[in-house]
Amino acid sequence: MTWVNAVVQGIMIGGLYALFACGLSLMFGVMKFINLAHGDLAVVAAYLAAGVIAVTHVPAVWSFVIVVPVFAALGYALQRTLFQAALNRGVLTTLLVSFGLSVVIENGLQQFLSANSRQLNIGSLVSDSFSIGQITIAYLDLGILVVAVVVLLGLQYFLSNSRHGRLIRAVADDREAAQLSGINYRHVFGIAAAIAFASVALAGLAYGMFTQFDPTIGTQAILLYAFEAVVIGGLGSLWGTLAGGILLGVAQQLGAQFHAADQVLAGQLLFLVILVLRPQGVTTRRELA
Amino acid sequence: MSEGGIAAGGTAAGSMAAGSMAAGSMAAAGGPLLEVRDLSVHHGQLQALHGVSLQLPAAATHAMIGANGAGKSTLLRTIAGLHRPTSGSILLDGEDVTRMRPERRVQAGIALVPEGRRLFPSLTLEENLRVGSTSARRGLWDTERIYDLFGWMRDRRGQRAAQLSGGEQQAVAIGRALAANPRVLLLDELSLGLAPVVVRRIYALLPQLAASGVTILLVEQDVSQALAAAAEVHCLLEGRITLAGPPAALTAEQIERAYFGVTAAASGTGSQPAAPAAGSGSPAADQAPGAST
Image 1 (cartoon, rainbow over the protein chains, first blue to last red):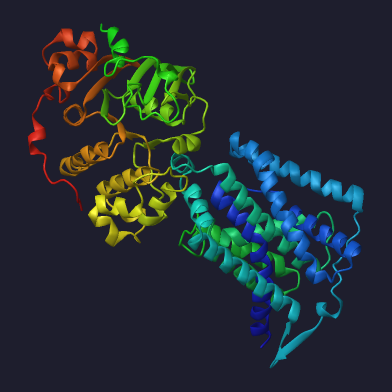
Image 2: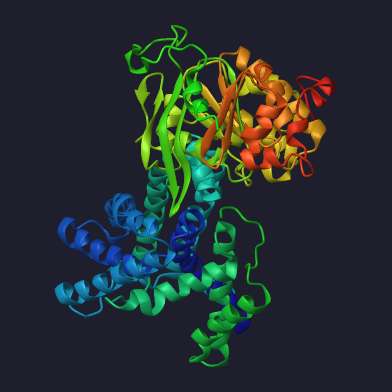
């Protein structure tokens, strides 16, 4: 029964990983931009939420109403300026620029907000749970998983059926041909970045409620797990991202059954095995790229 | 050799006072719809076009022929806005579009069907057409009209572009460009990689497009195909226009010389492949307008 429990808990945590990976996957799939500051942006979102809660006294769960739109706007603005300028100069530049942004964010947070860890206070919700047989499920974990599934399914639906989704796919397929069809691809990139940033903001909020965060957690944990989820699921595929996040979570929880210290290691092993045996990821359907 | 050919770009209507045409002019008043003035383009160190000038009157079909690397595709891509010229200018109905981004040029009325089709492979046939109409001008060509032109498309609109055959993809690429309702349609190497029968079907459509008021500039290595399709033909050789005129007025020898350059023509014997055999060999085989499969 403990093994079944481990799988269930793995699926729960996998939702959080998928939420982290969503924006990374979208940015890579559409503009071939690998955003090394992705994890740090999630941390910034958590700090922003803490600020919003302190100022407005709204319940923590509702802070997303402000944080997500702010991040969407930030994503559009960054894409049209810094990120587009980096893309114009080549793939290596995008890595350097986003790495630089990551360093700036981490040090900025440490300088102005201290290295102390914090958590978004959601009261008793952090520990409330229900049981099915011997398996205990926390409401928060389930909530995060539901949000992740809704976000990824919603995004998939948006890309497949909306006019802007169609433009995003066209630009991802062939930027130059899109221009020849009268599309301003920079604007479409901006929209994709806005969506990616909105999703990373949600992920940051979920993380902040789920556990403690500090200025350096973005690259130490979040970015790594997001990358692993994306690679396991398959680059540029949203379904794959969801599957990748859940597989990573399950692998970690199963690893923890052997020894608590094996938790992270098990995730890395799965990641390496996938890279060797199935580098295109567990889902072969290509929704973007 | 015929440097005069460059000036002869002005052949058709004559009136050189391009810029003076008022905005709404139908170009029927005599000014060229598209004018290229003294255009030079570099790819890094290499100069691909040397002061090319060209005037296209409205609602006619023009062909640009020339060997591999003569600069034909570069010319079309520069007109479409994908390359920045080093010098020279491009005017659409008297308006200077030289600094305009490609997507703005589409809105202004210039559409390019690029070499190699370049469809969006993960999008369906219909989605490709709808992307093409994203910033369409007002005009005749909507999705229904395009389906009327290519009868087979309606039944297969939900199929992904990647699953279509080469000829079908070429048709969709033309449809996607038409969806923007262009005034000038640039066609780059329509025949590339396609079976002759498919190429003939596609070329058989061009008169219908021209009749709808679209001005066509097509680039083609298959000289006989180009001569049969166009009212006016230009030949590019190493980035310069070496010949211009209506096909009927040009002799095979003139074309041969303009296509290969003086030296090749002087050597006379031996290696003269496909190109000069142009004359009127294949066009007789033309048939089957409209629908293709």
